[in-house]
Amino acid sequence: MKKFLFVSVFMFSMLTACSSEETTTYYLIRHAEKDRTDKTNRNPNLNEKGLKRAKKWATYFKNIDLDAVYSTNYNRTQQTAKPTAESKRLEVLSYNPRKMYDSIFKANTTGKTVLVVGHSNTTPVFANKILGEKKYKNMDDNDNASLYVVTISGDKKTSKIKKVD
Image (cartoon, rainbow, N blue to C red; front, side):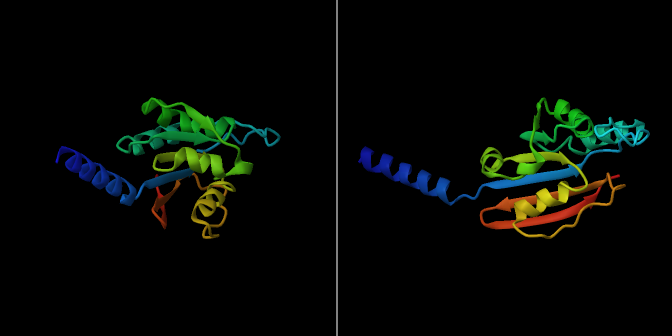
């Protein structure tokens, strides 16, 4: 009888685990305002307004449990990600914008809640790759306040854009 009960509980646990859908949530933002004083600088830092916005992002994500923070390897994206990552006691992980949402990234983030910091021409592309469709166009070069939220639950994918000022 004990064996039967154990096997029944074990089978129920396995069925429950297999039937529950993992939810993955991606928050994608563009870096905050960058220093534009030197047009030849391909890797500028954030300007004063950008540093303030980076702190605002950390405040926005204060009550959101993040499992990881990713950023491209540029000063402006790293500086945008840093306050949020520090507030969550996470390191900023780098990703290659030429290999967005590849099998490795997907495997490392499935079932997690993740912040991804990119650029005006990579953030919407990244969202599109996750969605598997060309839903979003490149961002305006002055748009530093858009937040793309992409959620995957089982086979269902949803997305939205919010303005966070």
